[in-house]
Structures are given as structure tokens and as C-alpha cells.
Length: 280
Image 1 (cartoon, rainbow, N blue to C red):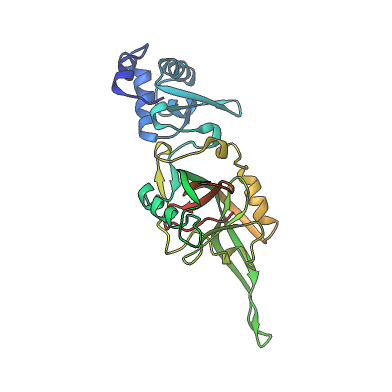
Image 2 (image 1 turned 90 degrees about the vertical axis):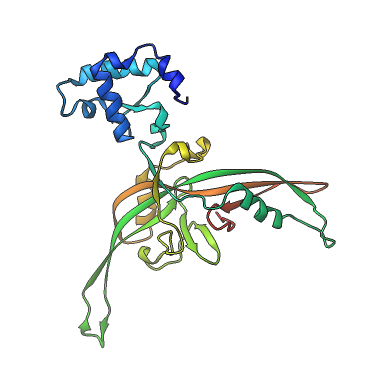
């Protein structure tokens, strides 16, 4: 539900007449994330019960949404379009899609299947932007340094780093500026800190983006594995200590082709930054 000026005016209860409701709305507006009733009551003269009753009324009026997690009620403004049922509790770190649909259509047209007379054998059917969820797992990794001549140097070396895994398939995300993005079930790097991942100078930096501005696919979000599974996948291959995990998103265009005569329909996945084909 999109919140408009008209819909706010049509609320069953005007929050302007209730100081508790005003406090809740102002706090959630500033935080731009889900909050528990106890958090909303913090630093005020209001009790958690008063906050919860007022928040529930705001849910009835269409201003707030409520989600239960581990027995606690989480509240957020509907206009922020958060999805706490999928772990999207606030603005999310994401890469911007630098290529718009027009640019992707040009790339997709160049990849049409054509015969030896350059006649089209298929046609573009649809183009859809989807932001793909990844787990970014931060970790520390230690190993013994080699001793020169058997006795010089040595000691332990510790590196702080992060890697990215597809949040549903738990495959490892690689990137290079020649082949683009690739997802591998079994990484070929000797150490986790040597994986050529998305912390790459050729990629833009991740930035906080409101979920409303991301193209999120609910079917894909339902398949997201817990962060603990992503950490376990990393620990099963490398001697690392996970320190933190967070969801991030990268833009992908799903391009569908249909055959003009014979053949099968096919789908091409292109990243929304450089237009490379994404393999996973």
C-alpha cells in the first residue's frame, strides 16, 4: 500500500490528536527501520503497553504495519515499504543499476540468435530488473607465515576481510572486469581472503537504498537461507572466524527470448552495472 496525502487524511484516527501516536510516527520516520514497542518507549514517559496500544491503532488506520518475530512485535511505517518477514528491516546496502532498460535492450538485441544470413531466429519477449540478495560475511582469517631459509621470519598472519554468497543458493560470488559476475559452488581460492569478490575497485560502492527503490522478487526472497548457513558454508571450506553477516543486493536484468519458428525460449541474465552475462 502506497501512502499518499489523501490516504493519510482518510485515516480512521487522526494521529495529531494523540501525543503517543505523534511520537511513534516521528521516531519511525527518523529511524527508517522496524522497531519494538520497548525501543519506541525508550527515553520517554510512555510505557511499552501505551506504545503498543497506540501503535496497534496506527496499524488499524493504515499508517503502520506490524510483524511478529520471536514473540516480539515489530512496527514500521508502511510508506517505507520494509519487508521484515524477509529480514529487510531497514534501508539495504545495494549496488545501483548503472544501466537502464534502454541500454540493456541494446545489449540484448546484440545477443539475438541469428542465422548465417543474419536473420533473426528469435525475438525479445521481456526484460525485468531484479535485485539479487547476497550474504556478505565478514571474517578474520589466520595462517602461519613461511620462514625464510627455515628460520627467518614466520609467525602468524591475520587478515580481516569479507566474501559474498548468493543468499538462496549459497554459491560464492566472484567478479572480475573481463568476465563480470560468476557464482561458484566450490571456490578455487586457497584462502577465503583471496577470493576475487565484489570488493573490487572497478565496481561502485554499496550504498544504503530504501527497499521501495529496489526491484525485489518475493519468490527469491522466500528462498533466502539464514546467515548462519552462509557462515557455515564458508567455515566448511576455510579456517575462518565469522564476525558479522549482512544482506546486500546487486542488480540483474532477466532477459527472456522467444523463438520465431522452431526452438525453445531462453533466458539471459545480465548484470545491471556493466551488462555482463551472469553465470550461476
